[in-house]
Amino acid sequence: MDSEAMNRATGAAVVVWLVLAGLPQGTSAAPTSAAPLLAQTDQRRSDQVVGYWRSSTGAEVTLAYTGRPQTLMIQVFPQPGRAQPRLEFTATWLDDRRFAYRDASGSRLIGEVQPGARRISVRGANGWSAIWERSR
Image (cartoon, rainbow, N blue to C red; front, side, top):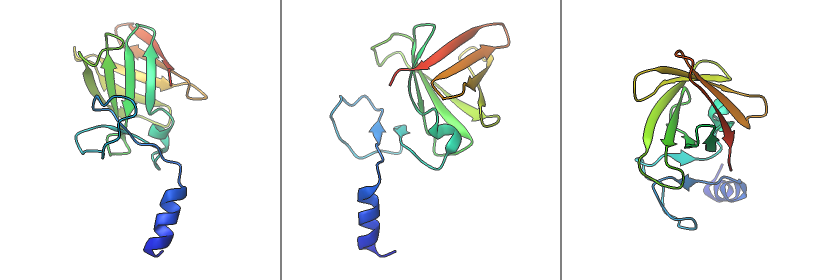
């Protein structure tokens, strides 16, 4: 494919990149390697869940790409509407619907994507559980 055809194909694609580095809405900036990105990719498992979620605990959760198809970045904002504090975890996909990660205390949590990818059930070995619902 020549560069002109590539430019047309790229221009025709509907891909939205959001930089989660605290930029105000409407701000545009080139993505940096340090900032997690949101976009459609060929990472089928992550493509279905990347975005913004609200936990039944009240926390806001952002799921983002790590650049590796077998992992997923989880950012938890315990105080809704505030950028800090922010807790970051890297989850590993166990199969097409389940991922695992360790929370700040070291407990292993399992997330299970529900059909339709609008809800994720999260459960810990100690009986803790939460439901994440897609917020946007």
